[in-house]
Length: 221
Image (cartoon, rainbow, N blue to C red; front, side, top):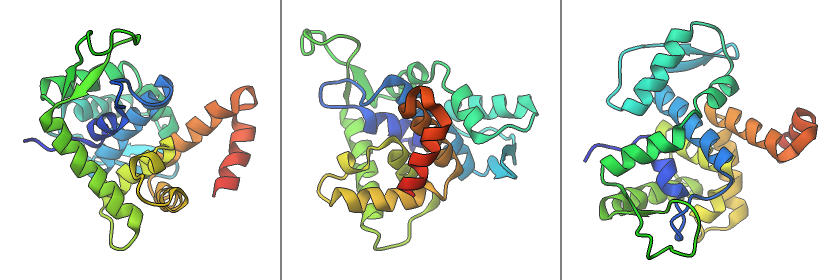
């Protein structure tokens, strides 16, 4: 089985028992786009230098989702902040990620009979997907415990989950405050997750935008 990308793991973690994806769709879009940047950072394709995203290597990866994002960043050739790329890479992101997970037999579209009273498309995790989910959840839990070293990939996943506010829900057997504190600490260390957190804070702040969001972020930190 080919290892899933951070973006794909994030999508599986977002799937709820009712077959829908958790949270506002726009937040999930931002999260999945940030996942692309995190994947490329872990693979040493992208870096964050003096406030901007830079290409370290344009060599393709083994993942078409990541390769498409890498090409877009490489072809732009302008200095752009992480938040620019998080927003820009949201285009059709859910559709593309779900399509890949379906092709790879991690997800299947749920029968209409099962969710006949609920609106919208619904999905089910396959046996293969359950294996991937179990592994991802175990990684999150071990990292939340804070008892050992966390590798860059796992740290990135925790940081993204923390920025989306999913930490306590995905590690329900540990104290919510401890999980959130641990993931918030990790979020500060990963530039894609920091950009994601900033964008979501601004959206939650509504028309007051960045001013209120900046205050909220400072309070959380």
